[in-house]
Length: 343
Image 1 (cartoon, helix red, strand yellow):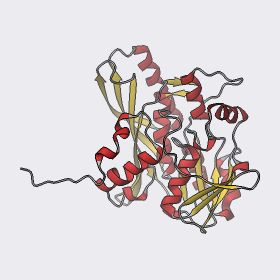
Image 2: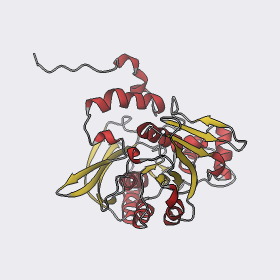
Image 3: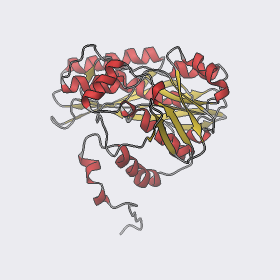
């Protein structure tokens, strides 16, 4: 008998839906990560709670990240699973303040997948990698039985170099910091949902899927003391802020009247009963910088950037949003996921 013993910190029977339901997320997924995954693999590097790991090697600093993509449909207005896989990984590296350099790719292909579909995805990945100035340098391919893979699943990992001395992490957020975002919210989630559900709106809603390294590197080059960065993907802006509030132990307060949400996206959310704060983005990030450097930071990020809030210290780990009539509400993690399988 082996002398190795493992006791799961939470009863497995308490979480059957985690393994059975597509898109399990929100509070349930975070509880699973906090109680099972994180304690099992705990180390000082992963404890930072960042989009990627920051590593020290031979006196230099690297960022390392990995992600998997299972979006349905595979192709949507403004992108596809291949574009998403490259940009999603590039953006996680950028949120660490790194210059992305190299990616790996792993394809899980379902038996019977049309070669034309795979070729379109591969070409999209190549174009996205060229646009982000990264190279795909290694990879793997596996085929699973028909009906077991839903077409294509993609895993990517990335390495980038950190060329500055800033400590960009949730724990670096400070009272008084300005909360900035780089553009309008909710387009990716609504673009995917519209195709999936066969919905037609007066104007086409295209995903905002895009690489974010360039605006982040401009921000750092401008001399802004960046405290934290987070791309607002699954779970949208709300989930990103809740995670950062928890890790920083501070109160993040946003003004909903300042949030840039296109009229067509807002209307689509109303039709579907969705809150734009929780709808996924794939080309948007939130930045925490000293208030004294907010204008400088906005100029560096680009013309669509806007300040939407401020960091307070009057409550620990809380996110609030103030409406147009001056009423504040608590912004919490969803108990489930509004838009499963959007990335």
